[in-house]
Length: 216
Image (cartoon, rainbow, N blue to C red; front, top):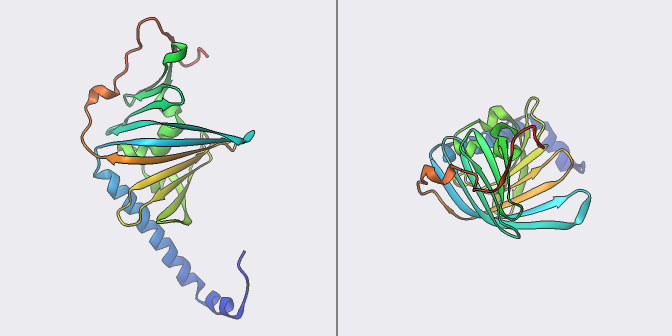
């Protein structure tokens, strides 16, 4: 809440002009993010993830691995720590392979909250039309964009993008689900070199159990 002072009262006289300037700056940053990723056809990085669970706030889960995106609609997450887990999408289906348990889960891509939230990275969706965008202020050198989904999509509550205001690239994200759990992702050693399509194809290994939608 703002503290009202003589200076504050004076500033309030010009508030509509200040608000419009803020909205313009926000729109320019959103356009810069979209412009940056429209020019990118492939994206890969190391990632570090921290999951904070609402029912266990003092026991966050820490994970790490490598992530790959390719237009149109392809992504792959290879978790290395603490356990090996793979998520592979060809743009239509998302496969979740857990080697330790010999299980493979098959999902429709549109049912993945993370894919929906980050689909602009793979050439789908539009930040301005898919989300209500607000300014989350500064976090160190990064500007924070707060995205709330429009319409009936309820797989997640909020997504924060930590953006480099110089060129629009995303350094980190924080995804909050409807239960209040948060997933913090930081991208490291990012590369935009072209990736082969074969890395986004998945064939269940022999002997594993495949669980498809509706079979859980």
